[in-house]
Length: 137
Image 1 (cartoon, rainbow, N blue to C red):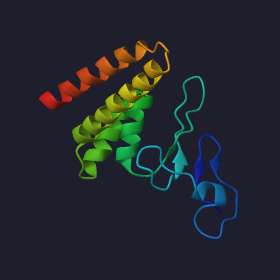
Image 2 (spheres, rainbow, N blue to C red):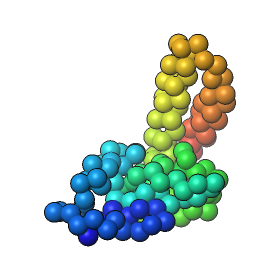
Image 3 (spheres, rainbow, N blue to C red):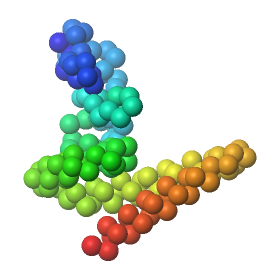
């Protein structure tokens, strides 16, 4: 059976030649680009479903940017990152740096096309404030 775990569905039922079926062998982690092993099962209005690998740093990065309201769960992931010998603060810094760069790219593209995406400025400022707070520690 395929090892890929679908959010709120469970393990894929396909019978692959190796670890993953044809579809899931091509599914990459949205953070690092490695082999995705499961979909994010976080729910708000809908199931997130973002493909992730088992690296806890990828999970932390994903939760910080996509589910910031999940404070207690993020704390648990941070503790797991630290237990595995990594720095949760460094993961957060890298996450915010990437987020700021990505948002600026989106804004530049939107402005270049004549769209008004001024709300992105708020997200950029919020991310820069959080990053500065992390760098001051």
